Length: 294
Image (cartoon, rainbow, N blue to C red; front, side, top):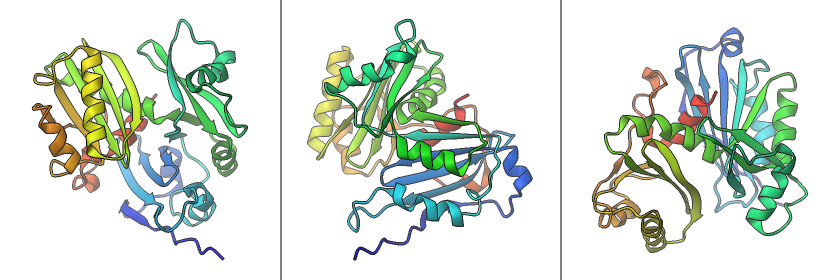
């Protein structure tokens, strides 16, 4: 018999009170990964007024967090509401690609993923897409179980599904405009994964995610990308986000080759929420980007 661990928030910042009427005027944002869930509520003043984070202990179970969502949603003081202005769900599926808008055709979405993978998608996958205002569409694989669960929870609600790449692309756009440099490399760290985005002359030039098992692999890949992009690591402005601190082994190793590496600032477009002021803002870039999506 396998006993599932009780799921409790590792981070929880909540308002003293929230009514169903307030929820109806706000946007629910869910950042869903196989072993992690982050959620926030964006109020009409564009403030993140609620932030919960749940993490599945991978050492105790290999089950996806999705298996515990029915219990979590049923007991949660925010998620049990059935009316929101809008619901946005971000997933970090491994299969995604960027297609120029002039070449994108909705009926070929699955074909794009097949070409990217080199094989047919799994039967439980839905080819989904999100169009950006920067001239391209992010096509990604969406687990059918996610759409069935979220759609079942909120059957009358408008739900937008996006890939984590879209949230980071959206978040880095205003940050890039705030930076004085015209070449900016963005690194977003997760456990054993990292996103690399490069913006030049205020345009996205590169976006990819890669896995790594050790710091040496991470450093090699980042420097390889810099070389392929033809940029000088010694002068490149590099902004770090996600699961990283200036004291982390990965940060220290990268800073030896990237002297202008620093923790990045949050994007503009969201108003500060006093209750969240003590949280490290750089850690939630993808969630901030999800809030900024239109």
